[in-house]
Amino acid sequence: MTERFPNLKVVFAEAGIGGLNYVLAACDHEWECRHLWTEGLPTRPSEAVRRQMFVNFWFEAEGIKLRQDIGIDNIMWEADFPHVASYYPNSWDAVERVLDGVSQEDRRKLLYANAINVYKLDVTNLDEWESPRPHFQGARQAAVTPTHASQSEPVGEAR
Image (cartoon, rainbow, N blue to C red; front, side, top):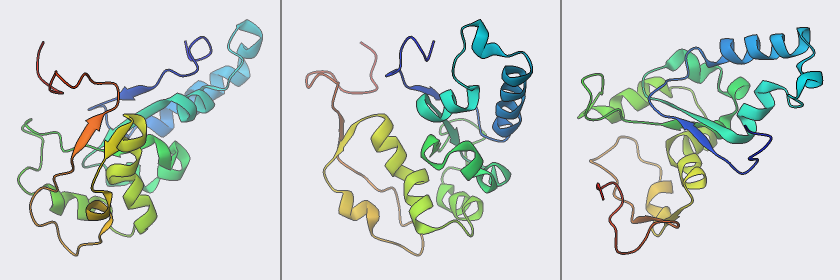
């Protein structure tokens, strides 16, 4: 599918990242052992994932430790609100715990920059988002508009 549609972006929302390294290793192993490039799968599975697929996290500190293996540009934070597993209203405390020791550049990508890129969001107040804060003081509200959305239809509402 990724070979036929190289511009397709796939987001595995609410799937987590904990087991992704295992899945990538297993798929690459099968690709190599079975010589699947001779069967119409020219691209190593992990390369296709890094090129076109994205995953979300909200509590998986162990997965974040392996972020470079997954691909730092392929991971986005999710709040998981309104599900019972969500940390809301203490989401920022969970973010700080999970991202403890993560560089500011990686935090920027994980928390918002990757989502801006994947969803092609036009963010009008990015300076506010990039201002470092010791603790989250309420929800940051960015004026975002998907570039593909109709101006007459609010995003996220049923049609």
